[in-house]
Length: 96
Image (cartoon, rainbow, N blue to C red):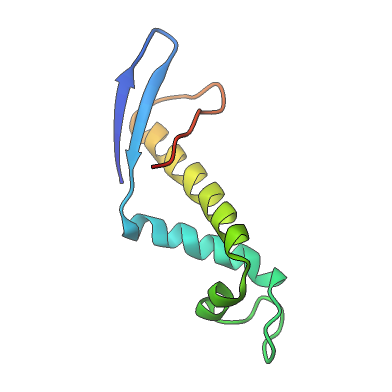
């Protein structure tokens, strides 16, 4: 992960965070683990199926939403602490 800080005014900053695939894999796995209990796969107890099977059987829009929540909160927290920024409100986020 790489983050860049740009000061827009006395009270506003722009924090740009670039994440590579290996940074995002852990957030995807966390999202899949959270959703595992909601997926029913024959032959497995609830939440005990392999991650690869869960990914194939979970609603993809739900996975995308959960993944974005996990990744944004984790990456934003890491970037804010690495740049020594103490946020006082929720960020405006643009995903590219």
